[in-house]
Length: 71
Picture 1 (cartoon, one colour):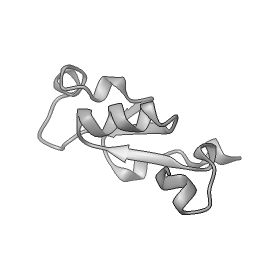
Picture 2 (spheres, helix red, strand yellow):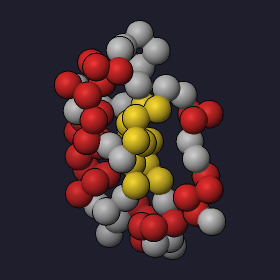
Picture 3 (cartoon, one colour):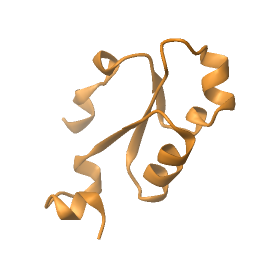
Picture 4 (cartoon, helix red, strand yellow):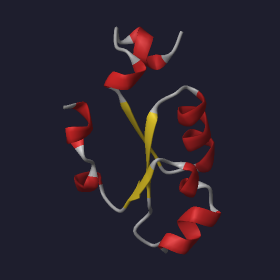
């Protein structure tokens, strides 16, 4: 059972926010839209080499999440 199913949601009704490559990989394997959350002390270049580049979008803060993807 996926986390979405446990909440009674479809995968396309969810987003995942992850700050680690393993979490991004798991989210993408589950079919989720995934934001890679860049640590404040890391550079964008580092985020891509650390695996966050595998996310659908890399963001710097939770305020950067675009909730219009659900519209």
